[in-house]
Image 1 (spheres, rainbow over the protein chains, first blue to last red):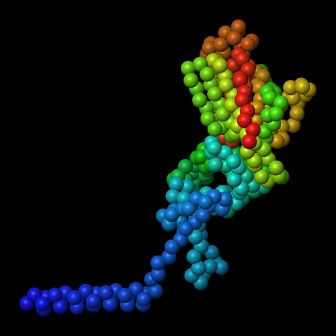
Image 2 (image 1 turned 90 degrees about the horizontal axis):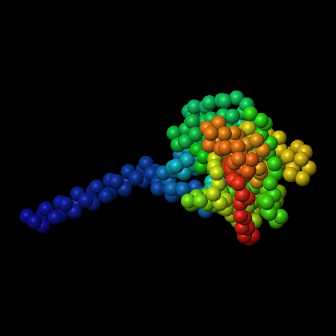
Image 3 (image 1 turned 45 degrees about the vertical axis):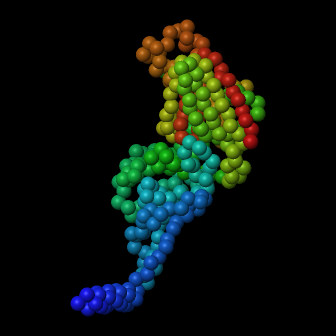
Length: 164
Length: 148
């Protein structure tokens, strides 16, 4: 009696393994390891920090996937915007610099932060606030320290635009 | 209120950074110590050139603001200490003194400064990557510089 029960259990187990394996192969499911690296740092972002680009790309209709990297603590799009600039040494806040003007900064905001349904407040004179669930992103037209336009995220990080 | 005038401040001959970055602001019972990283720029590269520590003994008042929001000082007249003439501030100089300081004015408005003190006080300014710091002090700060 005991032997028969053991045989049945073994057969049932093998059947389940066989069915699940064939399903796995037939549906083409694969495991993919993905990691995103900051362009100028060795910081490794986990898979939970990666958010898909939800913007429709007409050239991307054959199933390719574009991955946008964003640390979970950052607003979506911020890391991509930041990676267009070079780091400036600072212990107080991470600071990046790139060549550009106020128009470049406005264009960058539009390019990297649109598509996420963020609210935008325009204060005039070039000062713009982008409200995100992970802290506001501010564009300032001038700076006492740098004399140039700045985009700051939640007083934690800054991107400076230099004309030369 | 009188117009604020920003005077370039070069307190130490070899101190010639283009930018400064605040490492630490430490306030004990009668001493305020600010430590900054000094940053020079060579074309597109920003290079740390040393550490500077400014120690104020018994400062009268301290205020810090987001440097981008201080349009009053961004748009103020900048004057070279030597020439007394307005100078273009590009790149901006991170250390300055403010004539007709709004911080001093505010202290006067709340009667926290008497005329005797007003004449002795100087408003020192530091503008770094995020903050603009103003300090009212009777004496010049002690400065220590460690070059890298």
